[in-house]
Amino acid sequence: MSVAERPIPTPDQQLQRRLLILATLFMLVYAAALSLAPAVRARSWPVDLRWQHWIGVAAWLAFIRLLENWLNRRLERHDPYLLPLTGLLMGWGLLTIYRLWPAAGLRQSAWFIAGAAMLGVGLFRLAPDLSSLRRYKYVWLTSGLLLTGLTLWLGTNPLGYGPRMWLGCCGIYLQPSEPLKLLLVIYLAAYLGEPRATLPAGQHPNRRVLMGLLAPPW
Image (cartoon, rainbow, N blue to C red; front, side, top):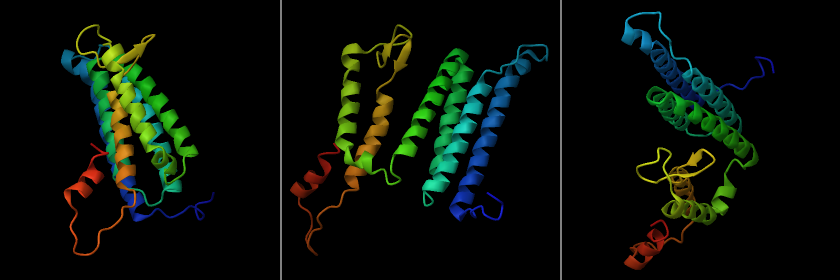
């Protein structure tokens, strides 16, 4: 595609790009600080600098770039703040894990890449209006609740002590409360987005009507 044929970015896309540039600068500065931290602590250059976290930075950059392109092509009217804020929180958390526990950072990078790949496959297969998520909202909610309930019976802790909030097998651990957060958002958005019967003008909803609307989310 020639330069003349490229679509002109909308104001929201331009805003999103500026916010993503700021998030990228934050990630690069944070990563550079982690690399130079051993030299700063030792006040000497002949030390082992930290480089493993740049794997996570590279994965983060590739994921953000691909997702930005997909959103601009498929969802031109998407929220320009959502991707930069979400990306910043994901990258910040990833680098913080590297800072506290480098070995866990590598594992988290592997999970990040796997999650990004699953998201990419899902985005290309789902309809732009996410109608399939809305159609099966009760399935997603029930699955998340059942998965979380299993922790009461099969819960474990990777450290061997403390709260048993994970499900694990063969060295791979999953905290069910994390996907449950996303499933709850999907369910509430689908439920609250359903068309409701409107009351006649001047009539106020009684307690029974309000409970009928609020009971399912609770």
